[in-house]
Amino acid sequence: GRRVEVRAGILLLREDADLNDPTIVTTIQLIAWELHELGFRTELTLLDRFLVHISLEDPVKQSERQALLDAVFVDKCTVNIKDLPACVTGLTSLSQSVRAPYLEALRKLVCRWPRAPESLVAAVAFPSVTSPNLFASMESEMLDFYCQTFWEHCGRAPVLPRRLPAGIETPAA
Image (tube, rainbow, N blue to C red; front, side, top):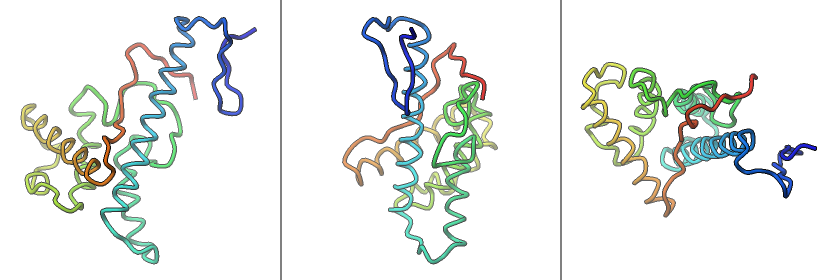
């Protein structure tokens, strides 16, 4: 029989399952990736709701907030992952030009938070930055601000998105 299977959302491994089996390794890596991705999406959403108070009776402002949050993600969704990515993209892309629009969406979101660094608020948009050093500096400053803000309000480090490991091929949707 099969050594690994998923039943009702639970990963089952038989006792004799080889943890070095590429299928098992890939499955575990994809699960870890998805947990990090969902954790980041949830924490970012909840931190934004805590820091930027918007009345539940203001559907226009709630919709604007959701649009800002959704723009941070390739699939434009904060509550679930519609499909596993076929490649590394979005905030975790190795390519500055691919990361830029998602970093810009995150910058627009966190610039609404109290104590957002003026250098981020006044910064040029990420897609407009051509200097790799300036891009890296802005990216680092934004990540530092996000992590520090999360720490101050939650007392622990945030869950951050991670890249799919090299060579992972996700199943066709």
